[in-house]
Structures are given as C-alpha cells and as structure tokens.
Length: 366
Image (cartoon, rainbow, N blue to C red; front, top):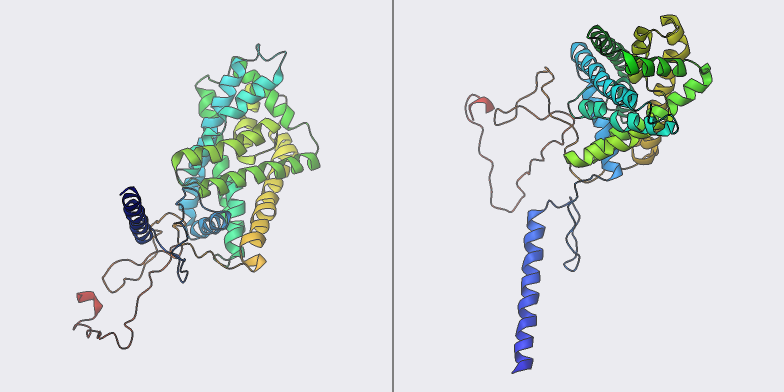
C-alpha cells in the first residue's frame, strides 16, 4: 500500500511540474526562432537589461535626441542646468556646515559633498533632461549605429552646452540674490573655484576625461536598470565617485564657478574660462565620444560587427516629436523608429484562409 501511495504521489508531482512549465512558457515572451527543450528551466525575468541591450537602448536614446527640434533640446538643457544648481547648492550648504568637524579629517567634507551631489543627475535623467556630458556619448553612439547623421553631434553638444550654462548661471544668480551664498557656504564656494582653476590645461583636461567616463556610465547603468531603486543606485555610485575623487564636470562647474566668483574669489571670468571651462569641456567630450561610445560600439554594436540582440525591449520613451507619422491599416499612428515594428503574419498556403478585399474608400474607412 505504501509503495502504491508513493508512486501515485510521484506521478502527480511530475504532472504538476509539467503544467507549470507549459503555463510559464506561454506567459513569458519567447525569443524568435529559438525552441528550448522541455527539460530546460524557464528563463528568469530580470529588472536589469544585459550590457548588449543596454548599449542598444543607449544608442536609441541618442537617436531620439537627434530627432528633436532645437527649441526642445535647448529647453531640456536649461532645465538640466537648473537641476545641476539644486544638487550643487545642496552639497555646498551641507558640506560647508561641517567645516569645523572636518578640520582634522578633510575627507569627511568631501564625502558629504559627494554623497549629496547625485540628486541633480537623478532629477535630470529621470525627467528627460539633456546634459552636454551625456549627449557627448549617446549621440555619437547613435551615429556609430547609423541611427543619426554625424552633423547631430556638434549641433546637440553645442546647444546642450549653452543651455546648461544658461540654466546653471541663472540659478547661481538667484541663489546669490536671496543671500544664500554667504558665510560658510561662500567660503567653500571660493575655496572650490580657486582649487578648480589652480591646475594647468593638461591636468584639467585629463580630469575632465575621468569625470565624464563615470557620468556616461551612470547614464548607461540608469538605462540598464528598469525600476526606480535600481536607477537611483546606478546614478549614485558613479556620480559620487567622480565628485569625491575630484574630477571635472563642465555642467557642475557652470554652477560652482559663478558661485565662487559671486562670493568674492580673486579670479576673473576669463580666468575660469581659460583655466577650467575649455579644458574640462574638451575632456568631457573626448570621454563621452571615444571612451564610452566608441568602446561600447566595438564591444556590442556595429563597430565590432556584432549582431543585434534578439531580445525585444522598449528602448526609449515614446514621444511625439512633431513629425507627421504615417497611419497603419487601423488608422493609428505608427510607432517611432526606436521601437520595433510589429510583424504582420501573412496567411500561409494550405491553411484554408483567404484575404478579404479592401473596403471602398481605402484603409481610412476600416
């Protein structure tokens, strides 16, 4: 009796496992032209894209940006400059407040400054803001993948550079007008601008490369994560890393340098332009276009003659960019170029199906 009971239990368990596998295989999307044997476990669904899919979404982000009009790019760039000011002011205020506590341990002040600064990148990346540093990688990646024309690179980089400058300077002027750039905050701002303008051209240029390499990896990882918590972690670590190290980020400097000048630093606008803004801008652009876009195009994209990922994922946000989109047979707008086009199944011979003739008046009356 016991042997018979155990044998029935094993048969029931096998049947339950088989039904679970069938149901799970029906619920999850199957990769095209890939049939797995029955004995293979179902694939685990992840909230994080693989590096190949993340790079392809990274390039699609640049392609989408290249399709935007100049006013839209400038608008999002100015907002990004303002958000840079929010994070920079937060870091200056709090880090300046622990100046006495960090006299014997200067690393404490640097850590607090770096830990708070990434709030600006969180605001920018999750609201569609445009930073010159990120655009210097996403747009070249789109060009390398033949999704954008090369002329988009200088156009978008220049517009976003100007927009970031305008937004950050306006925010710095408003903060100074409200008497918030005083006391310990003003002292830290002066100390920061003097330090940033004390190195020679080549050293600042190399520090710009190191900075934007990390910033672009934050953009890369943010696109790789698919939930809010994952995106926050993906942004926080690389950004706090470059700030704590002391690398040079041109949008951040657009806010910090004017704050130091307004606080009374013994420097001129020409000094900060030649000693910091020019080498930092060049270093940031080289890092984004070569050290990130070129490297990952070779690793996962067309530069390395790689095949596209068979996994169908949503690669960028769906935006109405003001372009007339064609209508399909159901009178609906077609999907943007960064989304995979739906595959229309044609009736096969011998299946007994027939195609109905189009109604009078064309597809508009369907």
